[in-house]
Image 1 (cartoon, chains in turn red, yellow):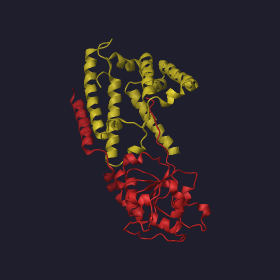
Image 2 (cartoon, each protein chain N blue to C red):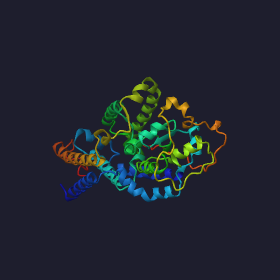
Image 3 (cartoon, each protein chain N blue to C red):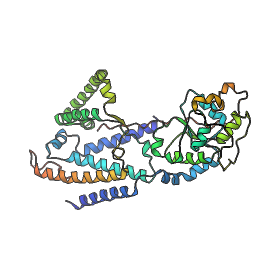
Image 4 (tube, each protein chain N blue to C red):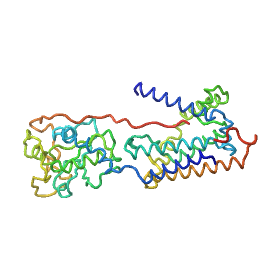
Length: 214
Length: 194
């Protein structure tokens, strides 16, 4: 065997062994790489969408919407927006992200914004596209649609305690949502249209394509 | 597709075709010799390209330059792949070309390459017309979607890459041995040393 072939074989072995040792980037490693970019988007409030915009998205038949509620099971059982899926933070990773079509709009929410922001960072680092945060969280949603403060402002900076500030007498599942209609408000029945700056950009995510004809 | 992408595709296609031709893949005798075991150039060239591509891709992913989820992976259809592989393998042995190499041979004016390419086009038309006869088998047989070796094994892609490198090196070593054991009809095959 020539020296060139031996060198080539050794090179392949070293690269292969190195790749096995280094491994593919985990969500945590990708989060470190993307930290500055994500922090900037959060700071400039580019991804926090107004509850009014979420209300309109829920009734937009031209797109697919997924809502992720990252609060505790107790808070979720007490109240959640109809259609929101409870997602514990520890479940978020690349396997979770694969389940959702990239072109769909996703909105993540917590009581205020703290946990939702953490979840948003994890989702972005795991490769999720078109994902936003519900500005002011469930607390602002309730203030607007339960207490009818249609002009309530998004608290900036958000409340760091991230606690549910409304009291509920009982936990109701989606079947009894008529007890809590503000979990599924109809924009046509709301007396005052809420003004907001549209932030959701519908990105057309082209599916990768290709093939081999060799 | 924008004009830049078209130009890039054209440049990559030309480079690919040029490499195949320069590797001797425009000659059906050399390609068919792979199956008679006396010239393993096809295995060595193609496997070298695959291994380098795999290592470069996954190193790029490991360094954060490429997102693997944005890379197209052919969806897996196990049973159709087995049947298609058998048909392609039989056609490769009989005709001496695979689709890409028949294109290379046609471009260099080889008549057998032109006939082979004509056969491919005819086969495509027949398949397209007959596909409605077996839609379930075509669309669902062993459908696994985007399914890779590391998904199946549940390990980091790096370990699979290392295993593929070891397999490639073992096959290169074995291929050289086979070339010595089977000298072929003309003694040592042309360009057997690669």
